[in-house]
Length: 167
Image (cartoon, rainbow, N blue to C red; front, side, top):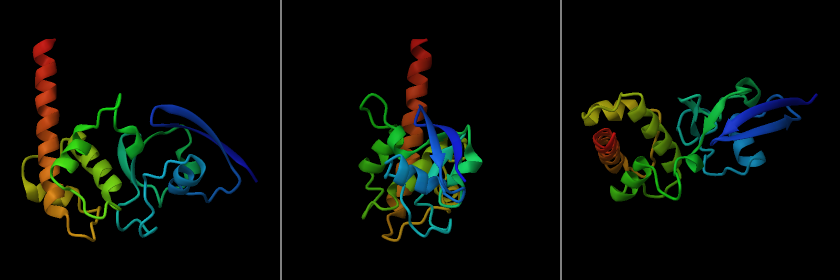
């Protein structure tokens, strides 16, 4: 039994034929679309390494069946940078050493990106810690991750303020 689905992935329309309806969104991204930035960590939805945005919401792609997201808009780590410029969240993770081994970093960045856009980051490190609690870092880079989220939020607010001044 084959199924056809259509997705918009990182702004590009993609039509995919699935031979198995049990294919996860994670496996579709990594194995069929060659978007290997999204990582397979626990494969049980507990670590957050596979976090992507589906229609603007954070999703553990290892738990999401691809077929159930027909027509969805998916954003992965590969889709954050624009015109060769890192997203402020990506730049802040680099500036604050928000990673060590780097395995969890794509999921951390996608979760932080969503947290900021949801308006849930705030300026309280504990609030950010709670908002990022679905993303684990086995190396212990959480202090840098929290600093990166705070900095990215400030960068985004500053950029929005500059754009309002120009308009």
